[in-house]
Every structure is written in structure tokens, then in C-alpha cells.
Amino acid sequence: MKFSISAISALLSNDIGIDLGTANTLVYAKGQGIVVNEPSIVALDRQTSKPMAIGARAKEMLGRENPDIQVVRPLKDGVIADFDVTEEMLRFFIKKVQKNKLLVRPRIVICVPSGVTAVEMRAVRESAERAGAREVYLIKEPMAAAIGIGLPVEDAVGSMVIDIGGGTTEIAVIALSGIVTCKSIKTAGDELNDTIVQFLKRKYSLMVGERSAEEIKCAIGAAGVLNQEIQHTCRGLDLVSSIPKTIIVDSSEIREALGEAVSSIIEAVRQNLEQTPPELAADILDRGIILTGGGALLRGLDKRLVEETSLPVIVAEDPLTCVVRGTGKVLEDISHFQKVLM
Image (cartoon, rainbow, N blue to C red; front, side, top):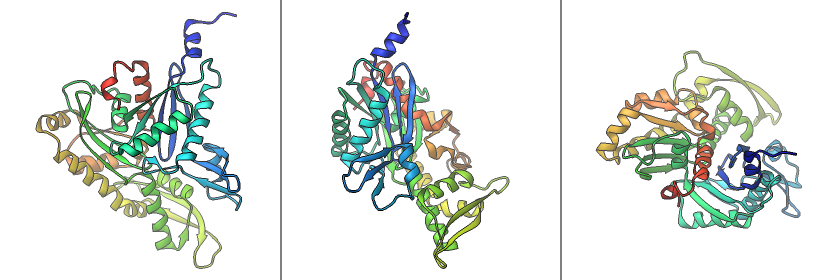
């Protein structure tokens, strides 16, 4: 049997990049690309506290668990909330990627929010090491996103990235391999979902779960007025009669519900721009703002930002994978990107 050099290299190479997100965890394997894209959710046995399911299988149980099962999100606001469960989740994803490798302890590049504390960084590092990493490198999410979309982060030119994830929105101006100004806020995908839950409860006395709220956000969520309003059928529990109920919700209602959260993101962008040195601000005027992360897909958000900032705004290609693609580029030449690693 003949093996090509690239096949042997892929078999021996075991470096991986991880976008450890509040909503989803993506894993990039050197030489293979993105090999894992699963929800950051773990289903635990309440009696033993042992994982019963991780990732997509655990998400299927969310909102449907019985008294013996606890479904948890081990990350909150972009950082580890449950150390032990995060470690189990990391170990599961690392084993999933490493199953066909000859070497078992990988070097890992992990993304962290720009506002992460030293204690939180240590928690991420220790979780990865205990899950089986040989070496752990940390990189800030907006820097990884910028590298992932091919921005010239090493040049003496300013680039502005807004990465809207599940737990945090990261806003950063990058130049000369560093983050010049940054703003990290906890208004992001999860808060948008929660806002929809509260809106339906308040207006329609309808209780919906987290999954249903996310479906509504993806189906008809918008940050600005649409050319044609759209509707979505949603099901939940009537809080008055205590029986299941179906209603039809209009995109204009959801836009109104999300208004405050969207305004918070826009205000944070404004604040970051105010702190940006004039030379870099001029670069951003020429080059525009790049939107990445799942929140970049919210209808009309790019147009709202253009209206509010008078700057060009571009939604990155495949915004959900920008951050993990950035870790992949770093893995290809860690020595070259040494300055951007923490």
C-alpha cells in the first residue's frame, strides 16, 4: 500500500485549533481543515455527574430532559463557567479529532475573548492541558477572526473587526500584530435569544425554550426594516391555560424586541471608534468594518451599522468559521504568528 507524503504528514501531524465558543465549538485539524462543528452543550447523568452526550446529541436533549438528566452549557459569556464539564467536552472533541493519529498529545491553539482575565486564561489553559494537550497557545478572538479572513494584521494599517458570537461581541481595531483598541460586551447571540423568550412571554403569554427562540431569531430576526416582512410559526406553552399553543409572529415584532440589544452593539462600536487613533480611523474609513461570527448573519445588521457609523461594512464570507480558520492559519506557521499569541 502506497501513502502520499501529504497523507503521511496528516497522519503524523496532530496540531489542532479550537474556537471554544459559548454556543458552538469548532475544531481545525492541521492538514485537514475544520473537522468538528458542534454545540458547546453537555448532557450529564444527575446521579454520577458523568457525561451522557456531548455536542449535537446533547443539544437534541435540551429542553426535553427528564429528572435523571441535566443538560448544561459549560461556557458562559465566552469563558468557562464549569471547569470540569468543559474539560470533559474538550477531551471528547480532542479524541474525536485524534482517533486516526499516531501521536496522541497535540499542540493546541485556543481562542479567548479580548476581555478575558488572567484567571480565566489559566482556566482555559489548564482545561486543555488536562484534556490531553501537549502545548497550549491562546489567541484573542478578534485577532483570530482577522487572520481567518485574510486581513493584513502585521501591517502598519488599521483593520476593524466585529465578531458577534454566542456569549460576547468582540470589537477590535488591529494593526502591527496587536489589538490597538478593543471592546468586549456580553450582548451577543444568547442575549438575543433570551430577549425573544421574554418578548413572547410578555406579549403573548407564551413560554418557549432556548432552541425555539434561536429558531425564531434565525428565521425572522432582523436589525433593520426589511423590504418585505416575513412571518414564522412558533409553538410553546400558554402561560394562562397551561396547554400547548401555536402563534404566528411577524419579523417587525422581533425587530422591535431585539432593538435594545442591537443598539447596545452599535453603541459599543461607536465607543471603540472614539478611542481609535486618527491614522487608524482613516484606514477604517478606506477599508471598512468586517463583521464575523454568527451574529453577522442577523438580517440588516450591516445596513444598520452603515447608517449609524457612515462607514463601509462588509459581512465576512462564512462568518461562523472565521475564528477557527484563523487558528488554522496560525497552526500552519506558529513561529510566524508568535507576536499574536498570548
